[in-house]
Amino acid sequence: MADVACPLCAGDGGALVWRGAHLRVIRAQEAGFPAFYRVVWNAHVAEFSDLSAAERAHCMDAVTLVEQALREHVAPAKVNIAALGNMVPHLHWHVIARFAWDSHFPAPVWAAAQRPSPAAQEDTVRALLPALEAALRPRLAALPLP
Image 1 (tube, rainbow, N blue to C red):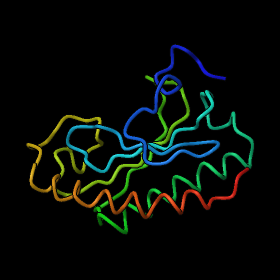
Image 2 (cartoon, one colour; image 1 turned 180 degrees about the vertical axis):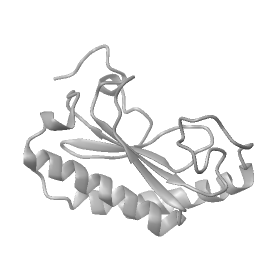
Image 3 (cartoon, helix red, strand yellow; image 1 turned 45 degrees about the vertical axis):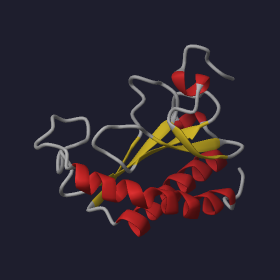
Image 4 (tube, helix red, strand yellow; image 1 turned 120 degrees about the vertical axis):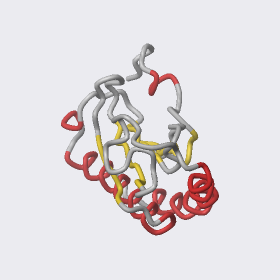
């Protein structure tokens, strides 16, 4: 059931990459982090434990596919995965490619910037995202449904 006050019920939550029956993958518009994705559960649930075991497996399989696509296409120094939901209590996972050159590395993306954001490196990563997303879509579509 949708929550009319919830921004992830009201809209995609970013640039839609793929939508399935139970979840969607979006590219977030987070300044300084060009390869920042979210796996968003379509139904309004607040916690991962609200899902059935099969739904949890489906969700984590999608998170894994996003991580693998990031590693294959943009070769980050690290991939951060987090499910917070303090500000938006709608189940979603952050899957973020991190680079040694990013403005916050090695600190979390939510920490204070440690250096200016390197526009040229960010643009290089952004140029790789269409191929990443094109490769990711059929993999997500092939996931077995819960």
